[in-house]
Image 1 (cartoon, helix red, strand yellow):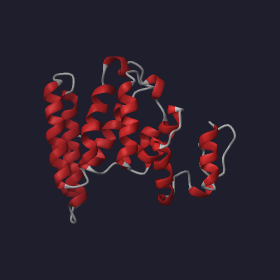
Image 2: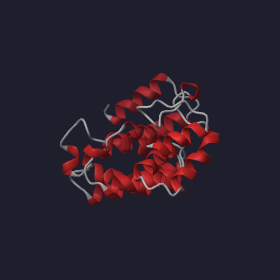
Image 3: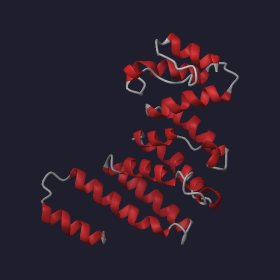
Image 4: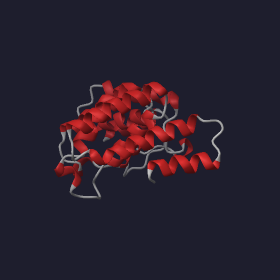
Length: 198
């Protein structure tokens, strides 16, 4: 992993010998926005090790970079079993806010819910993908409509196995409206929660 060590050193990051992609503590564990271009270049460089490009893609996903996310998602989709690719970078899927990410997120959801990927509770990623879809849906009225429509279609295609996601749609709708309401009082919130059956 000499390339990534040299790459990080060029950017002035402190690098742990055992973790060549570690980022300096001064950056708070996240890439500074001005570093995105450098990481993007790494994604397109002539590096032979696909692991190097995957590391760059993960960091670009953290920054909500579409190309980085697509590379990362394609890697996941080409490997059918979650176990071999379960890592903490899935938590950055929640950073995705553009509706352009929805088709790939739905593909990831379908793959994550395959029987071979739901057997082991410790390697499941469907909750991280659902959280990303939820966050995407509550960004705007347009996103909410698009996510709701797409998920309703997927639920219908995979019924009855996916019927458990119907309350997820209600919760997303509720959260969107709660976020947009400037005058939600306690009684309104309790009534809304009771209507959802929560």
